[in-house]
Amino acid sequence: MRGLRRLLDWLNGWLTDYLSRPIRDFEPAAAYSMDQLRALLQPGDVLLIEGNLRISSVIKYITQSTWSHVALYVGPQPGARGDDPPVLVEAELAHGVIVSPLSKYVDFHTRICRPIGLRSEDRERVVAHALGRVGHGYDLKNVIDLARDRLSRTSVSATLKRGLRALGSCEPTRTICSTLIAQAFQSVRYPILLARRMLPCGDLRSNRIDDCVETWEARHFSLFTPRDFDVSPYFTVIKPLPVVDFDYTRLRWAN
Image (cartoon, rainbow, N blue to C red):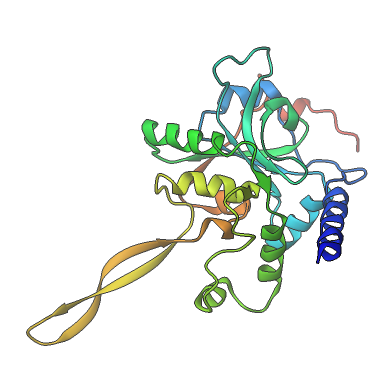
Protein backbone atom coordinates (compact mmCIF):
# COMPACT_ATOMS: atom_id res chain seq x y z
CA MET A 1 0.00 0.00 0.00
CA ARG A 2 2.83 2.40 0.84
CA GLY A 3 4.55 1.54 -2.43
CA LEU A 4 1.39 2.31 -4.37
CA ARG A 5 0.98 5.58 -2.52
CA ARG A 6 4.55 6.60 -3.34
CA LEU A 7 3.97 5.72 -6.99
CA LEU A 8 0.80 7.82 -7.12
CA ASP A 9 2.57 10.75 -5.45
CA TRP A 10 5.42 10.47 -7.98
CA LEU A 11 2.98 10.38 -10.91
CA ASN A 12 1.11 13.38 -9.52
CA GLY A 13 4.36 15.31 -9.11
CA TRP A 14 5.54 14.40 -12.61
CA LEU A 15 2.21 15.39 -14.17
CA THR A 16 2.16 18.67 -12.23
CA ASP A 17 5.68 19.51 -13.38
CA TYR A 18 4.90 18.62 -17.00
CA LEU A 19 1.66 20.61 -17.18
CA SER A 20 3.25 23.62 -15.43
CA ARG A 21 5.82 24.14 -18.18
CA PRO A 22 5.26 27.05 -20.59
CA ILE A 23 4.39 26.52 -24.25
CA ARG A 24 7.23 27.46 -26.60
CA ASP A 25 6.69 30.44 -28.91
CA PHE A 26 3.36 31.33 -27.31
CA GLU A 27 1.99 34.68 -28.50
CA PRO A 28 -1.12 36.23 -26.92
CA ALA A 29 -3.90 37.52 -29.17
CA ALA A 30 -3.77 40.89 -27.38
CA ALA A 31 -2.25 42.35 -24.23
CA TYR A 32 -2.96 45.39 -22.07
CA SER A 33 -0.53 47.46 -20.06
CA MET A 34 -0.52 47.40 -16.29
CA ASP A 35 -1.69 51.02 -16.26
CA GLN A 36 -4.71 50.14 -18.43
CA LEU A 37 -5.69 47.23 -16.18
CA ARG A 38 -5.02 49.11 -12.95
CA ALA A 39 -7.21 52.02 -14.08
CA LEU A 40 -10.23 49.76 -14.57
CA LEU A 41 -10.03 46.90 -12.08
CA GLN A 42 -12.18 47.05 -8.95
CA PRO A 43 -12.33 44.62 -6.01
CA GLY A 44 -14.62 41.76 -6.95
CA ASP A 45 -13.74 41.89 -10.67
CA VAL A 46 -12.91 38.61 -12.38
CA LEU A 47 -9.81 38.59 -14.59
CA LEU A 48 -9.89 35.97 -17.34
CA ILE A 49 -6.50 34.93 -18.71
CA GLU A 50 -5.31 33.04 -21.77
CA GLY A 51 -2.50 31.15 -20.12
CA ASN A 52 0.78 30.03 -21.69
CA LEU A 53 1.28 26.73 -19.85
CA ARG A 54 0.67 23.21 -21.09
CA ILE A 55 -2.27 22.84 -18.74
CA SER A 56 -3.67 26.00 -20.34
CA SER A 57 -3.93 24.19 -23.68
CA VAL A 58 -5.69 21.28 -21.98
CA ILE A 59 -8.26 23.56 -20.32
CA LYS A 60 -8.86 25.57 -23.50
CA TYR A 61 -9.44 22.35 -25.42
CA ILE A 62 -11.87 20.75 -23.00
CA THR A 63 -13.83 24.00 -22.50
CA GLN A 64 -13.64 25.13 -26.16
CA SER A 65 -12.72 28.61 -24.98
CA THR A 66 -9.90 31.15 -25.21
CA TRP A 67 -9.75 31.42 -21.42
CA SER A 68 -7.74 28.90 -19.45
CA HIS A 69 -7.28 30.69 -16.13
CA VAL A 70 -9.17 33.07 -13.90
CA ALA A 71 -8.20 35.28 -10.95
CA LEU A 72 -10.14 37.52 -8.58
CA TYR A 73 -9.04 41.11 -8.16
CA VAL A 74 -9.05 41.94 -4.43
CA GLY A 75 -7.01 45.15 -4.53
CA PRO A 76 -3.96 46.07 -2.41
CA GLN A 77 -4.26 44.70 1.11
CA PRO A 78 -3.46 46.60 4.32
CA GLY A 79 0.28 46.90 4.79
CA ALA A 80 1.07 46.35 1.11
CA ARG A 81 4.15 48.17 -0.11
CA GLY A 82 5.67 49.01 -3.46
CA ASP A 83 4.25 49.97 -6.83
CA ASP A 84 3.20 46.43 -7.71
CA PRO A 85 1.60 44.83 -4.64
CA PRO A 86 -0.20 41.47 -4.69
CA VAL A 87 -3.80 42.16 -5.79
CA LEU A 88 -5.04 38.93 -7.45
CA VAL A 89 -6.18 35.77 -5.68
CA GLU A 90 -5.75 32.71 -7.89
CA ALA A 91 -5.23 28.96 -7.73
CA GLU A 92 -2.15 27.69 -9.57
CA LEU A 93 -1.31 24.09 -10.36
CA ALA A 94 2.20 24.26 -8.91
CA HIS A 95 1.52 26.55 -5.93
CA GLY A 96 -2.13 26.26 -4.91
CA VAL A 97 -4.04 29.39 -3.85
CA ILE A 98 -1.80 32.45 -3.81
CA VAL A 99 -1.97 36.24 -4.07
CA SER A 100 -0.19 37.66 -7.12
CA PRO A 101 0.76 41.12 -8.46
CA LEU A 102 -0.98 42.57 -11.50
CA SER A 103 2.29 42.70 -13.47
CA LYS A 104 2.20 38.91 -13.66
CA TYR A 105 -0.34 39.07 -16.50
CA VAL A 106 0.67 42.24 -18.32
CA ASP A 107 1.93 40.28 -21.36
CA PHE A 108 -1.12 38.01 -21.46
CA HIS A 109 -4.43 38.17 -23.26
CA THR A 110 -6.93 39.09 -20.54
CA ARG A 111 -10.54 40.11 -20.08
CA ILE A 112 -12.23 41.86 -17.15
CA CYS A 113 -15.66 40.54 -16.12
CA ARG A 114 -17.54 42.60 -13.54
CA PRO A 115 -20.52 41.31 -11.52
CA ILE A 116 -23.58 43.41 -12.28
CA GLY A 117 -25.17 45.19 -9.33
CA LEU A 118 -23.12 43.40 -6.66
CA ARG A 119 -23.69 45.19 -3.36
CA SER A 120 -20.64 46.67 -1.65
CA GLU A 121 -21.06 44.54 1.46
CA ASP A 122 -21.34 41.39 -0.63
CA ARG A 123 -18.31 42.44 -2.67
CA GLU A 124 -16.32 42.61 0.54
CA ARG A 125 -17.55 39.16 1.53
CA VAL A 126 -16.55 37.72 -1.87
CA VAL A 127 -13.07 39.19 -1.51
CA ALA A 128 -12.75 37.97 2.09
CA HIS A 129 -13.89 34.47 1.09
CA ALA A 130 -11.20 34.23 -1.60
CA LEU A 131 -8.48 35.63 0.66
CA GLY A 132 -9.47 33.10 3.31
CA ARG A 133 -8.50 30.29 0.91
CA VAL A 134 -4.91 31.46 0.41
CA GLY A 135 -2.62 28.55 1.19
CA HIS A 136 -5.05 25.85 0.02
CA GLY A 137 -3.76 23.20 -2.38
CA TYR A 138 -4.59 22.66 -6.05
CA ASP A 139 -7.16 20.00 -6.94
CA LEU A 140 -5.75 18.36 -10.05
CA LYS A 141 -8.45 15.71 -9.86
CA ASN A 142 -11.05 18.44 -10.46
CA VAL A 143 -9.38 19.26 -13.80
CA ILE A 144 -9.20 15.58 -14.74
CA ASP A 145 -12.87 15.09 -13.86
CA LEU A 146 -13.84 18.17 -15.89
CA ALA A 147 -11.95 16.80 -18.89
CA ARG A 148 -13.58 13.42 -18.55
CA ASP A 149 -17.01 14.99 -18.16
CA ARG A 150 -16.66 17.44 -21.08
CA LEU A 151 -15.17 14.87 -23.45
CA SER A 152 -17.68 12.13 -22.67
CA ARG A 153 -20.93 11.65 -24.52
CA THR A 154 -22.85 12.07 -21.31
CA SER A 155 -24.02 15.60 -20.52
CA VAL A 156 -23.38 17.34 -17.22
CA SER A 157 -27.08 17.17 -16.38
CA ALA A 158 -27.14 13.43 -16.99
CA THR A 159 -24.03 13.05 -14.84
CA LEU A 160 -25.71 14.88 -11.98
CA LYS A 161 -28.84 12.78 -12.33
CA ARG A 162 -26.70 9.71 -11.71
CA GLY A 163 -25.91 11.14 -8.28
CA LEU A 164 -22.58 12.91 -8.91
CA ARG A 165 -23.10 16.33 -7.33
CA ALA A 166 -19.49 17.50 -7.43
CA LEU A 167 -16.23 16.93 -9.26
CA GLY A 168 -12.71 16.63 -7.92
CA SER A 169 -11.34 15.31 -4.66
CA CYS A 170 -14.09 17.00 -2.56
CA GLU A 171 -11.37 18.01 -0.09
CA PRO A 172 -12.23 21.47 1.36
CA THR A 173 -8.58 22.55 1.27
CA ARG A 174 -8.12 21.83 -2.45
CA THR A 175 -9.47 23.87 -5.35
CA ILE A 176 -8.87 25.06 -8.91
CA CYS A 177 -9.00 28.62 -10.22
CA SER A 178 -12.62 28.67 -11.44
CA THR A 179 -13.90 26.65 -8.49
CA LEU A 180 -12.23 29.05 -6.05
CA ILE A 181 -13.96 32.09 -7.53
CA ALA A 182 -17.30 30.41 -8.19
CA GLN A 183 -17.44 29.36 -4.54
CA ALA A 184 -16.63 32.93 -3.45
CA PHE A 185 -19.57 34.34 -5.42
CA GLN A 186 -21.89 31.54 -4.35
CA SER A 187 -21.06 32.38 -0.73
CA VAL A 188 -23.21 35.52 -1.18
CA ARG A 189 -25.66 33.72 -3.53
CA TYR A 190 -24.56 35.75 -6.55
CA PRO A 191 -25.41 33.88 -9.79
CA ILE A 192 -22.95 32.80 -12.46
CA LEU A 193 -24.91 30.31 -14.56
CA LEU A 194 -28.31 29.13 -13.36
CA ALA A 195 -30.78 26.42 -14.32
CA ARG A 196 -34.46 27.36 -14.42
CA ARG A 197 -36.75 25.13 -12.36
CA MET A 198 -40.52 25.19 -11.95
CA LEU A 199 -42.01 24.13 -8.62
CA PRO A 200 -45.54 22.76 -8.67
CA CYS A 201 -48.42 24.65 -7.12
CA GLY A 202 -51.87 23.21 -7.02
CA ASP A 203 -55.53 23.81 -6.49
CA LEU A 204 -56.41 21.68 -3.47
CA ARG A 205 -60.11 21.73 -4.34
CA SER A 206 -59.60 20.24 -7.80
CA ASN A 207 -56.46 18.22 -6.99
CA ARG A 208 -54.89 19.88 -10.03
CA ILE A 209 -51.12 20.34 -10.02
CA ASP A 210 -49.51 22.84 -12.38
CA ASP A 211 -45.93 24.06 -12.81
CA CYS A 212 -46.35 27.65 -11.78
CA VAL A 213 -43.60 28.73 -9.36
CA GLU A 214 -40.37 29.79 -11.06
CA THR A 215 -37.15 29.09 -9.13
CA TRP A 216 -33.47 28.95 -10.01
CA GLU A 217 -30.87 26.33 -9.21
CA ALA A 218 -27.12 26.91 -9.11
CA ARG A 219 -24.50 24.47 -10.34
CA HIS A 220 -22.09 23.02 -7.85
CA PHE A 221 -19.02 25.27 -7.78
CA SER A 222 -16.72 22.41 -8.88
CA LEU A 223 -18.45 22.32 -12.29
CA PHE A 224 -17.45 25.84 -13.32
CA THR A 225 -14.71 26.72 -15.80
CA PRO A 226 -13.12 30.10 -16.67
CA ARG A 227 -15.32 30.57 -19.76
CA ASP A 228 -18.48 30.51 -17.62
CA PHE A 229 -17.72 33.98 -16.26
CA ASP A 230 -17.40 35.25 -19.84
CA VAL A 231 -20.73 33.81 -21.03
CA SER A 232 -22.61 34.58 -17.80
CA PRO A 233 -25.39 37.15 -18.29
CA TYR A 234 -24.70 38.40 -14.76
CA PHE A 235 -21.18 39.65 -15.54
CA THR A 236 -20.40 42.52 -17.90
CA VAL A 237 -17.19 42.71 -19.93
CA ILE A 238 -15.00 45.76 -19.25
CA LYS A 239 -12.44 46.59 -21.94
CA PRO A 240 -9.57 49.06 -21.52
CA LEU A 241 -9.74 52.02 -23.88
CA PRO A 242 -7.23 52.24 -26.76
CA VAL A 243 -4.19 54.42 -26.41
CA VAL A 244 -4.81 58.19 -26.30
CA ASP A 245 -5.47 59.82 -29.70
CA PHE A 246 -5.90 56.46 -31.41
CA ASP A 247 -6.21 56.88 -35.19
CA TYR A 248 -6.32 53.70 -37.23
CA THR A 249 -5.24 55.58 -40.38
CA ARG A 250 -1.87 56.30 -38.80
CA LEU A 251 -0.97 52.66 -38.15
CA ARG A 252 2.14 51.41 -39.91
CA TRP A 253 1.34 48.03 -41.42
CA ALA A 254 4.06 45.44 -42.12
CA ASN A 255 2.30 44.15 -45.25
